[in-house]
Amino acid sequence: MHDLRSDGAGYMTQLFGEKNRNGLTRDLIEALFPMFEEASAGAIAVDRDARITWINHSYSQLLGLNDPSDAIGHPVKKVIPHTRMPEVVETGKPLLLDIMEHQQQQLVVTRLPYYDDNGDIVGAIAFVLYDDLQPLTPLVSKYRRLHQDLAAARKALAKKVRGTRYSLGDFVGASPAALEVKRRARLAAGREMPVLLLGETGTGKEVLAQAIHSVSGRADKPFVGVNVAAIPDNLLEAEFFGVAPGAYTGADRRTREGKFQLANGGTLFLDEVGDMPLSLQAKLLRALQEGEIEPLGSNKVTPVDVRVIAATSRNLEAMIAEGSFRSDLYYRLNVLEIPIPPLRERMADLGVLCEALLEEICLGLELRGEINDAGVSALGSYDWPGNIRELRNVLERALTMSEEGGVLDADAIFRVLPRNGSRPLAIQAPRSVRPLAQTIANAEAQAIEEALVATRGNRSRAAKLLGISRSVLYEKLAKMS
Image 1 (cartoon, rainbow, N blue to C red):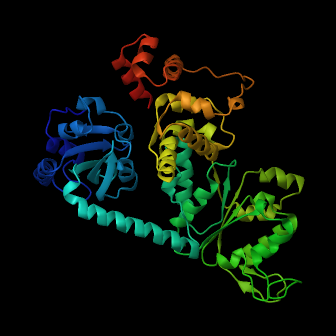
Image 2: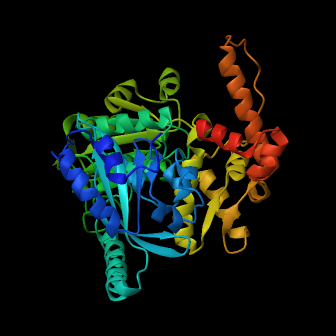
Image 3: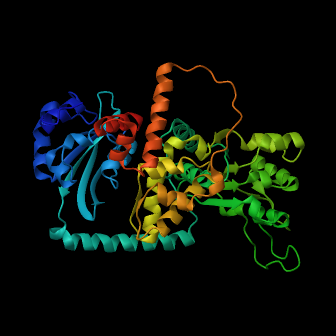
C-alpha cells in the first residue's frame, strides 16, 4: 500500500517505471506531475481492477472524506459513483475533458491510463480541473445545447438507418463467466463467421449480437434483427426473403424487400431461431450456403452478403434428436458458440449490473437513485428466472415506489421482489471436501451478508451484531469485494 504522505510525483514514478508505453521518462513524469496536481482541484489513481490506490488531500476534501486512507483499496465506483475511471482502464483510451456529477456538484475531469514496462494497462490517474463551473457557464451551456442537438440527431438518424444501440461495454459484468462471454464476442467480431448465442430469455443475447456487429468489419453496414417467434409461420418466408410485385392476391404492386435484402452487406440477427418451422429451415440453409435468395413469387435470384448471428433459448441438440430442427442448419449456424450464463450463475456481477441499470433508469425517469449493500444482498436471495430483463424491472419498480428516488435498501427491494422467487432448495449431492480455510471464509462472508441485510446496510450496527469492530468489518468487506 502506498504511503499517502508521500508526494504524487514519486508515486506516479513507481507506477510508470523508468519508461512507459509512450516513452515518457521518469524525469519527465516527476517534472509534469506536480504541475498537473497543483493546477487541479484534486487527483486520484486506480489500479487495473479500478480500485483506489492513491488520492491526494484536496480530492479527499472535495469528496467529503475525513481521512484519505479510508478510500484506499475500495472500488472507485463505491467512492465516486459517476466516475468513468473503469472505462479508461478497460479501453486504454484517455478522457481528456469530461463533466462529472458528484453529490449535485459538477466537476471537469481529465482521466489518463498508465502502463507498465510491457505496455500493459495497470491503472489510471484523474485530475479535477475545475470544481466550480460558474466561470465556465457559457461554455457549459453551449456544450449542453450541442449534446441535446446531437442526441436529437442520433434519434432521428436511428429511424432512417438500421444500426446498433449497444456496444460491448453494455454487456456489464466482471465475473469469470461474463469475461469469457466478452472474450468470445471479441473473437467473433474479428472473424467473418456465423455465431450462435445460447441463453435463457433476458440474458442479453440481442445486446451481445449488436455489440459483436458494432466492432466488426461490418459496423458501418446495416444490423437487422428479426424475432422468429414473434412472426406467424405463414408470413416468415415473405419476412425473410421479400415479396415480388403481385405475388399473391392483395400483394403490394411494388417489390417488398425482406430481411436478407435489408441486411445486405451487414449483419442479420435471428432471435429465437429454434422456433423456425422445418419448411423454412431448408430455405434458410440454402440462402446461407449459396449467398442468394429468391423473393416470394419471383423467378429471379438475388445475391446477398450477410453475416448471420443466431440466438435461442431452446436446446437445439435435443430438437435435432426429436426431428424438429435440421442438423445441417445447426452446424451451419453453430460455427462459434457463445453460451450466455443466467444471472443466478453470475451473482458476483449483481452489484455492477444494478449500478449500470439504475444509471440508465434514472436518466429516463429524471430521478436520482442508488442501491446499498443490503439492497444488493436482498436481490441475491432471488432466483431471477427473467434474468437481467427482470432485474431491470424490479429496480425500476423499486425506484418508482420510493419518494423521488434515493437509496434502495433491503426494505425497498423486498417490497417489489416476487414472493415466490426464493432460490429453491436443490437435492443435496455429495460434496467434495474443501480446505478448512475456504470453508471458514465462505461462512464468514455469509454471516457478514446476513448481518448487512438484517441491519439494512448499516455497517456500524452490522459490526455490533457480528461482535467485531467497524474497522475489522471494513477490512473484511474490502477483501470480499
